[in-house]
Length: 112
Length: 114
Image 1 (cartoon, each protein chain N blue to C red):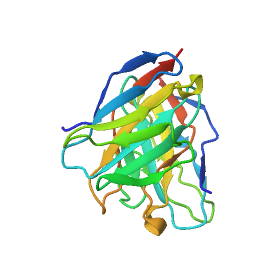
Image 2 (image 1 turned 180 degrees about the horizontal axis):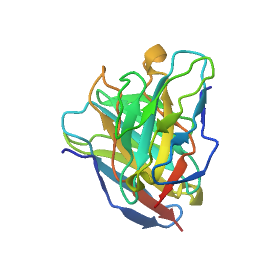
Image 3 (image 1 turned 60 degrees about the vertical axis):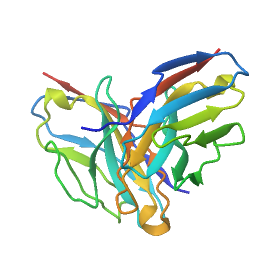
C-alpha cells in the first residue's frame, strides 16, 4: 500500500526566512510525486512534480529515493506563500493507475 | 484559463436521500476523477473514469456510489442513500490524457448530511 506522510500540520515562518515542508512516502516501486497548493478559498492546484524538475514560484522539491522523501523548499518565504500544501503520490509510472494518494497537508503561515 | 466547475458549492441533504454532485471537466480532458475530504482528514481518492467507464476505484467507492457522464460535458457522482459519514467536501478533477497525469481540480462541493 502507498502512503504519504506530512509530519507538520502547521509551519509558521517570518517573511524572508527559508521554508522546508516535509513529505515522506511509502511505496515500493517508482513513485510519481507532486506538491499541490490550496490558497485561501481557492481550489487545489498543482505546484510542481518531480518529473518536470521545475522551480515554480521559487519552490523546488527533490525526490530522494534513499530517504523516501520529497521535501518542498523555498529559500525566502513571501507572505503570499501562506496556504495549505499537500504532497501527493501516484503509482502511474509502474501501474498506469492515476489515483493520487495525498498527505494530510501542512499549513504554511508566513508572518510579516 | 479553462477550469473544472462543480455545482452546487454546498448541498444539504437528509440521511437516506439520494444526492447527485455535478462537475464540468475541462473540455478536452479525457480522465475524470472524484475525491473527497472529510473535515480534518486527508483528501481521498474515490474513482477515476476514462473512455466511458470506471478505470479505478477505491474501497470507499462501494455500491452506494455511482458515476456517470450523461452527455459530452457533465460528469456526475451519485450517492444513493446518504449516510451521516458521507458529509465531506467532494472534489472533481480532470486530466488531459494518457501521457499527462496532472490533475486539475474543481473548487469542491460541500455535502452536509443531516
